[in-house]
Length: 623
Image (cartoon, rainbow, N blue to C red; front, side):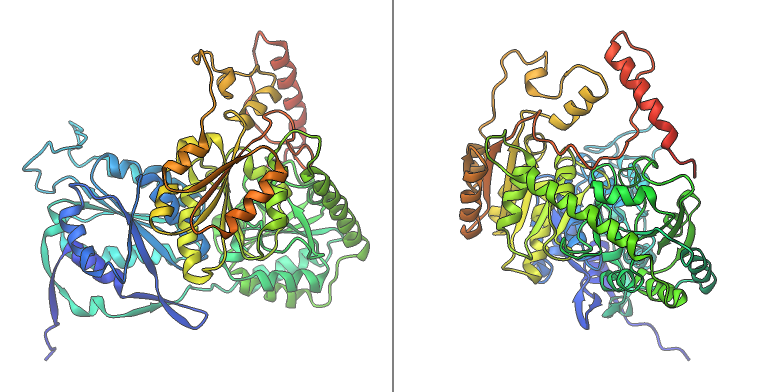
């Protein structure tokens, strides 16, 4: 006769917390709790029940008080990115606008394939008090609410309408967040009454569970086909994406490229797969890339794309490669491996690269091809040296990047996003160590910079407490989201924030001008609704949030200020004006498809439209 299952009576909120407390992951032989804690803003939709459940475990599972739900989600995404998707944070928000504020962050995590758990309040399941505070009423569908909007921006979505559903929902959400191919955000809608409902859960559900990231071996037939294609290549190139780091395949990539003498180019997400001085590293690829990488990509006959989703900034909207170049897509995700008629090798890069290497036997790309690639890289390095130099020139992003690059420590982490800085960092930053660059360009999300820096610093403090997190942010993104300067000071998670003020949305103004349009509504000075433009005192603003802050006039002063920030005891903000027109990195750009006006009274717009259309013949056709 079967013994009765031992149970424990818990509320839904208590059961969620207890389950998370007992989920561990093995990383380099050490067992660590998968959930590093959470970010939370309490409201009526989550404080009575979820708040009650989190209070007793606050020392083991810290809850960081956010200033804005969207920035909480950004911080959680940066935390997961630092930990290479092996650990995550949860975000909890109240019903209504608090939850709605997480939509952008969820989309960012989805685009970047990052784990993020959202525990959000929902309307009452009984509907007895309807309509409740912050409820959206849909007259023909009473089950529909704000939380349903997350279905488009999550990998896993559920609404808990009975306590027993957690027995299925929590393992499924966790499995999604840890899956190498399907990794992304998970959302649990928690009706306010259901959060407090009690249930007799089986105790075994809360047993300590140690997870390991699945490593999918490639299909031998796919490896054979890839080897048959690559072994005949005379001009092969490897594109290294962010998935290389997530797979723990940096060493495997380096060994593969070295063994077979194949040059490597990096995507934005894969920007720190190799240090800048590695002779195999030919530079960043694409719209925000380098002349060196783009030149060999354009001549390549076989392209091995490893751990990349081949975003348009990588492919130059599919103009960066020859029309007859053949692509091998090595990716743990089937969807990414098969893009643009690629020959797919579906599997973990850490296993797939050695398997492909064995199948290639003693194949080595021609020495002349590598020599040509390295010569191009040397020329690009010389351009970067000149580009970041300062003297009798207007202040620029590139100069600020060069100053910091020369003075920072090897393991310092650089964070930036959106606007003009991703391009400038990608092109000009010389990587000092593996995995030290976080350029958020999957969703290209303004506002990620400071919030992401805070989340990255929380993660960094767990493993590298002496290293710094350095944030590059423009004035536009700073004004959009800056409150986590205050968060970093409150929590003693020191950041070094460089605010580079170019008077508005200067990179979009540049795009506006490049497509023949007049400057309009991007730079503060060009907004017709602003009768008297003035400059924000970013230094005073940062000081008001508790940070050290100073304003510098030029890169030389920036160098001195940065060294002071390195020794400071809390977050330091350094402000420098940069020119909105001069000083942009002008080399290293592939074509990029943007919508241009077919009809216009402006002859410059018509001319630029014709130029854009003429370049379209470089574009590969594919799916």
